[in-house]
Amino acid sequence: MNAFAAQPPKNFEVKPKLDRSGTPIGDLLEISMGPHHPSTHGVFRMDVVLDGETVVKLKPVFGYLHRNHEKIGENISYLSSMPYTDRLDYFCSMTNNWAYALTIEKLAGLAVPERAEYIRVIMAELTRLQSHTCLVGFFVQDMGALGTPMMYAFREREKILDLFEEVSGARMMCNYMRFGGVRVDVSDDWIARTKQLVADYCKFLDEFETFIAENEIVLARTQGVGVLSRELAISASITGPMLRAAGVNYDLRKVDKYGFYSRFNFKVPLGDHGDVYDRYMVRVLEMRESIKILDEALRDIPAGPVMDPKAKLRGFRPKPGEVYGRVEAPKGELGFYVISDGSPNPYRYRIRPPSFVNLTILEDMCLGHKVSDAIVILGSVDIVLGEVDR
Amino acid sequence: MIDEGLKSELQKQGVYVTSMQELYNWGRANSVWPLTFGLACCAIEMMAASMARFDLARFGAEVFRPSPRQADLMIVAGTVTKKMAPLVVRLYNQMPEPKYVIAMGACAISGGPFKQGYNVLKGIDRYLPVDVAIPGCPPRPEALLHAIMTLQEKILNQKLTGPDRPRHLNADVEGEYPVPTYGPHDLQPSKNSEVWQPPPIQR
Image (cartoon, rainbow over all chains, first blue to last red; front, top):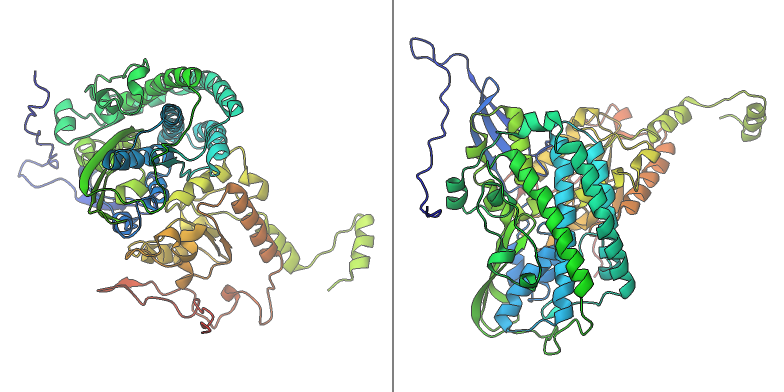
């Protein structure tokens, strides 16, 4: 079957219960969840219409964190946008940096030294580990397990942030990659400690999975909830773990083979049902694959320079043209579209954020479920508002 | 006021004397409950501060309350956009007195790296009285701990009576701050001149 021949979307509208004469029983209740709500993961608002406790309509409202990212990017030089990309998805600054650096390298035709490519892979996979770990913490918190899973997740996150801080000088906003390489080299000692961390991470994942994966409450709250069909996922251009949980084998690390991902041996975990549990499980399995990639990358990393000698940081003016570059960020396809007119600033600077696109089908997943399930479904989408609103 | 020497002498005998003001401030300073209120990147560092490694609980401030009606402290953690600013002021108005504000990060102080943006409020101090400001983008969790300690010091030195008493003990002033509305170009009014009094620019 051609997966891209999408079926017409099912009519998900849920009719309110009617009595014999055809008048609705009871009233519909419209509530506004957010922008200040502890489980909307930031300043995000859902206008929910409820029949009893069942969601019959849901309207996502964005824009509470619109920080004019693209407009600012068109008024500053190419390199000055690099620290702004950190603040897109503030959990994953390294992958954001990589996506932007990759785009401009494509535009300017810069080559990246081998060691720098390895460092990029290591950083991106560490980012994926900490992003997915935190997501699982938040997500279980949304189901009512206040505190403890978050404590576990943040404990591990701090260890990864220590490594980031050592090479880049900042915990969260790393601003580490440059066009044509990375800013500073990593030391042998750093690599040894990263190896140790990766070895320990397996134990942590085992522990974390023991508590969550077969927990009765987690199973009851997530299995069969928020099912996203394969057809809808493809036609709404969903990417990342959400798409793979719906059973579509599409991972840019395999499709584009950017960086040196073709050299590593890893699998793409796929879901079967497309429900919330599959989305959780796909992320857990992805972390295991990330550990495999990290093991190989840390073993094989060659010596050498980390910057392309032709790369010019000051007075950088790429030739006119347009380019689209994308990477597989932990949340999905993160793309940058840049038009250059030969001046020091981009003429057009556009970001394709994964969480924004993944959020567009929130209503389809929530209709017919209880309002407390809508929270869990939103948690499984894994949104970061810095990226949604830009 | 009781003599300090006599006080310590009495303490040695097992008699503790204090004033109402000291007792009240001591209690408040060690149970500052913040509002669970994350706006942007700084909120992640705020969460990290409340987690195991940094452990905000040592300062009695780990009880993040999701409802403004139960909170004492608003940590404005992140960029305040013009769409969000009225809601921030409304949340502040819903908090019970005595209440405090920490402006966390460059964005909450001045708009930070996004200051040029057409949709970004250039500092929450235009609408709310900020007690402690933490620079950084984002500030480290240690910086937030320092801010909490600074705030505790401030609370401990508050007078309950006299002309320096806090706003909520003064019956003459309005309890709530005006909430701005969305105007055609900007927020209306664009600042609350009661709280925002920048020094005049010398040229």
